[in-house]
Image (cartoon, rainbow, N blue to C red; front, side):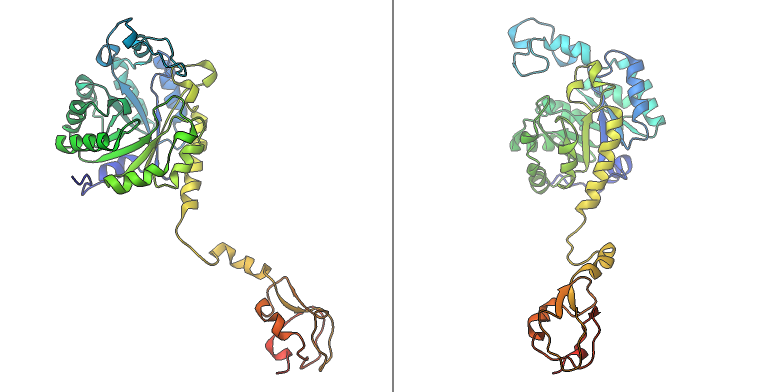
Length: 355
C-alpha cells in the first residue's frame, strides 16, 4: 500500500516552523499533579521556538488494571520506575481529563499547536470534542490496531511513534491508519528506553523509513540533552519531540530525560542552524567566500630585478595574497628571464617573462 497522501497541507499548516522540523514539547506527567505547574510550563515554552505542546490522554483504568501481581510491576532493574505498579505509575502521571480544555486553550492562545496521544476510544472522543487537530499514537500503542483505526476514522492526521516496532509492525500500523481514513500519516523514529542512549538512536533508520514507507519521518527522542535531536535534522526529520519539565531537580515521572523550557529555545535555534548547515551539494566558493579567495597564494617577485635577470627561487616565491599568477606555473617560470625592470613585492604577470 502507498501511504503517501496527495495533500499534506494539514501537517504543513499546523506544524510549520522557522526552525526546520516542528519542535514538539511533550508534557507527559511532568505536571506532577498540578494544573498550575502544567500551565507554568506551557507559559514558559511560549516564544522558545516550540511549535506544539502535546499531552497524553488516558486514565490509569484505561491503560492497565489495579493489581499487585508480578505481571503489573515494573521489574526492569534499569528503569526509572523499577518496583512500581503500572496502575500507580499511571495514576501519578496521567493528565486529568478536566484539565484538557483549559490547557488546550492556553497552548493555542500562546500561538502553539495543542494535540495529544489518546490511549483508548474514549480519549479520542474527548479530544474530538476539543477539536484536537492531530493524533499521536505512542510507541507502546503501535500494536493497538483498533485504536489506530479509531483515531484514523476522525480523518485527522496521525503521527505514529515506532519504538520497539519491527518493519512488519510499522506496516500493519500504517495499513490500519490508511484503512481508518487518516488524512495524513507521519512516523517517528523512537527508542523506547528512558533515558535512551545515543548509541541506540540509530538515526540512519530515518532515511530507510523515508524510502521504505514513503511518509514523512520525525524523531521522538528520549536521550539526554539535544545532541541526538539536532543530529537528526541532517537526516531530514520533519518533527522532533522531546519531553518537557519545569525543573529536573524538582523531579517528575519523566524529568530525568526531559528538557527544561529554556533548553527548548536552544534546541530550536540549534535545529535551525543544523537545517541551514545541511544546505545542498555545493563546490567552489560561496558568496561569502569570494573575499577569501584573495588570501590564497600566488607567484610574487620578492627581490628587485633588472631586465634580463634570471628568475630563481631567491627572487620568485609562492606567497599570499593571490593577485599574481597561479602557483601551478611556478616551476615552469624558474630560469626564465625578466622582460623588464621589476620592483620587489609585485605580483607576477605574463608580460614580465621573456618567452
